Length: 240
Length: 240
DNA sequence: CACCTCAGCTCCTCAGACAACCTGAGAGGT
DNA sequence: ACCTCTCAGGTTGTCTGAGGAGCTGAGGTG
Image 1 (cartoon, helix red, strand yellow):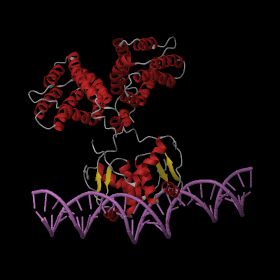
Image 2 (tube, helix red, strand yellow):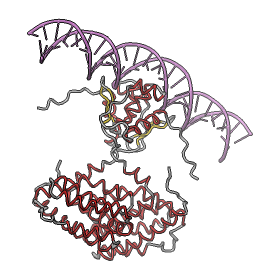
Image 3 (cartoon, rainbow over the protein chains, first blue to last red):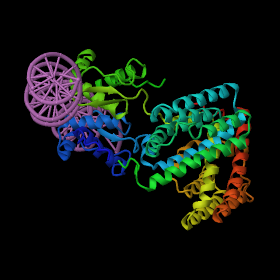
Image 4 (cartoon, helix red, strand yellow):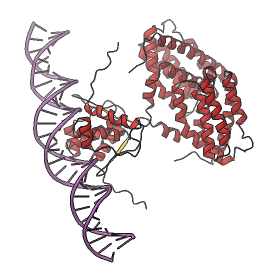
């Protein structure tokens, strides 16, 4: 039951959150002048330095800007889109669904554009994954993800590569939970190894259709498992 | 000659910069424990509260994390990956390629999951696009993007919706340039209107394959145009 | 070897003081 | 009527001293 961290958190953190909420909720739109430090201190029931540090934190995040003698002003309403946090909040199933969708098409491009260097990297990742099958869950999942990342990299589109990288943390968490929960990965030739080998071969010989089909099959299978475990409410998704 | 702002900037800002430099330069890698407040204050030649606020600013930016009783630790070396900036830097072609890949699959899901409300929204967006064909370039591109966004929304996957939203600014820029450059959009039943109508109909009747095919055709066509204009080096990509 | 205790360090919070600065109102000159 | 100057009030910036809360590692105890 995870024991959900019980930090009462510092006063500065609380103050920061209160102020940030005012901004992100639209209560204080861009251009607003915040109440003075002393006023805020009284309102929030904390000391002036505490308020100052909270404001500094928001300034560091790019939400407000302090002008000496004039006041503190809102200059943005969103913390520059915290993508990782958004992925953490979204359900594993949704994340995995998008990942599937992206990666399958990436495999198609990879089959069309792979270079010799890509193929070498793919084979290396494949054997690494095989080796990691005996290791602990984390290492195995890492190796698995590395192989998939190699496929994406072979598509030679930096946006695609960055996008996949953005998904990795959320993906890793979901997969570790899954492996841990279902005791997947029986060690006698772990399941998926032949699938992965087939995928690499398809990319190697430039067979885009086969690469798509193979990857789609694998990812759909995992997605199905995720859906089932999500239904049982086991992981319940890091519900804060 | 711009009169280059002569603000000596506050001590806190200077301290923040000094500390940030230490981190981004690799002098203090992830995991490093920063010197204590009093030590930093002495080395930087400022008061303790000044140091504290500088540290808070870095914490707000996600570079460090303070643990009471233990110290302040470096938890990242980059200010949280500015995704919009990355898209701006990447070429239009790469962005559009990924957009195509994502949206085509989104159309498939949309055809499978669309609700009555989605269909109503799609039709509304379609007529809006038709109406905007007479307006200026910006408005037309906006209406076009809105229609595509409606398709993505019908897939009912928040991650997908957010992802597409992330692409919108970069997409908009590229499309405005393209429309402006080629004088596309002849007003007599603008090109693509029938294609878009067909797409909406396919989603409406749940024909995933047709939706995919139609959309893929349209986006590939535009992608081809982008490739050509990019070659002539016209836009040269918003090279800053 | 495991467990407990504790001193010393760290960050956290507050209060008070003064400096530097901006803003707007009003006086005064042109 | 317009411009300029002055000044008071409010704001952020900085420093200091004090005490509270929490972590960490050394050393003692069983």
